[in-house]
Image (cartoon, rainbow over all chains, first blue to last red; front, side, top):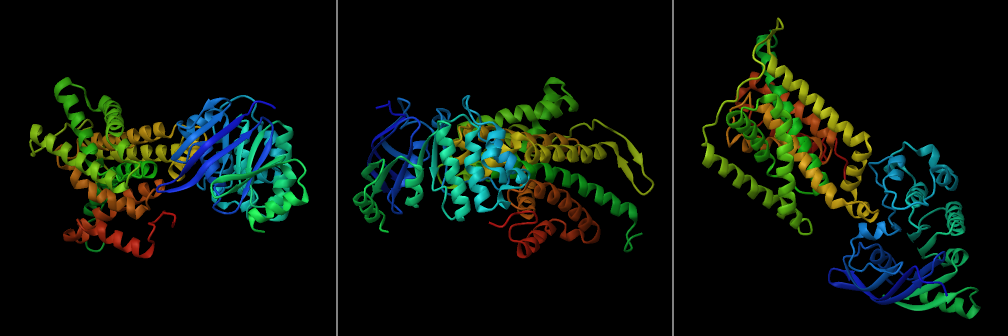
Length: 234
Length: 291
């Protein structure tokens, strides 16, 4: 087994008085695309926030490339090579597409070039001078993914990139994830749409009530599918 | 004659209005930038403006440093003062209710004003005019210094607007205003951005103070006189709007000046009447984005 890129153990955390994560253990190896599945409120997004360091209350251990990050500030974690694309996309409305794209600083060599990003998201090219607040949901999502590919971060946290988007755009996001995997990016993907997750990821952690309930890998048997469906309540 | 008033009187008041407007614009600009990034209503802004004028006065009286070098030196000195204040006090308040930031800066304003009153007295001191004389334009007499004030304010406001709206550094500032958590999660040093922003806002207030020194009596109260007006200007322009702060600043200076001609009794409240009017028609202010 490869050495883990990210290894989380006994992670607990939450917001204010309410605890959301109750001891998460998971591992991601370099080059993997892994999903976190689970119902609303299972702690998937909170886990991503803990990894990037914007969850204020977090305890346990999160090691990235062997380095303990549980006490680090989010900017320090980002500079280790972790990039985060939040569920709400967080496109800056008062910045143009170009400015949004240029905002995340380059933290290491090996990021995608502008032309490579344009090739992944040709739609963005005509919108370069549009303000973020004027973009459609699909354009915002492409920009939110596109802008973190430039930085040289090799580990991407994508929180529900397909949420609320038209099928044709969901398909394009899926192709992007496949392309990034081929380029050697490591991706932790939070998804509600588990058909999408199964199509694009190789391993799946199913979360329930702030814990990892199960890990599934490779071809999933009918019985495994049934269990996932019962976890997700579909 | 316009409406039975001599044109010289009206133009004279328009000019005074423009000058006050220049000071309002520069100060509300600083206040708007600080509020945008720090989410702190900087009640010490008036005191920092007053300190700007006093530092210029001290440089001149104690060290013989004149107006023109002071125009550069004072904002730098005051930016450092601002950075120290931010690191010492304001930084500790960001994680709690914004009201504490307001209270802390209000306390700072009172302490600063009280300290200057103790050492310099309340009477105030005159600062020499670096550009005496003027030109007769036919319809009015334009003192050189007043013309200079308007020109330099327009240039400073335009440059600040450009820096914030059109440059890479400005994009960083706008992004930090919108979503500081996300900017930080990209690996950017947001605490440093905040510190620098506060220093810049304070420098703008101090610059306005130096500009005001030769026209107004340099006194410890000059800041508290102007601060209420500045808050009204920022609200009228639209909280957080850079262009709004500039336009509303100049506009309200002129409105105030004209009121002195047509209805002098109303000149001290006209800005607040405009504020009520603007807020009832556009609650987010002239250039504010509704939230």
